[in-house]
Length: 90
Image (cartoon, rainbow, N blue to C red; front, side, top):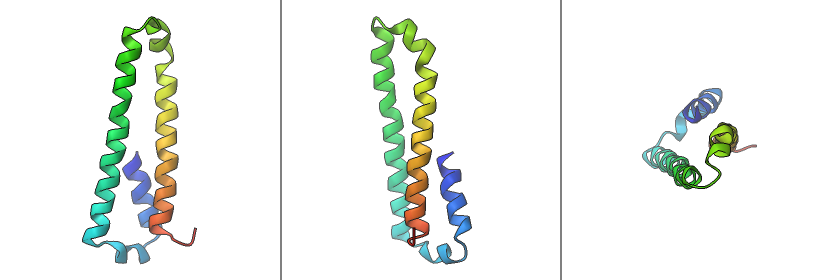
């Protein structure tokens, strides 16, 4: 999903965004993707803690809500980064 957001804003900025494709820019995108993956994986520590706590039953019922909020939050952050990278006027 996050890659689709980045690619959409890249495509919307064509042909101007084509000039941004340098080695350093691609490495920056790679770094941001790795950081997003680290943030996503950090949720597993919270999930394990919640699974072994006394709130296990409640957690199993509502964790999808927190997942949906996290995905939406990641999408919003990705949108703002894409706007800043591919359209510096905004």
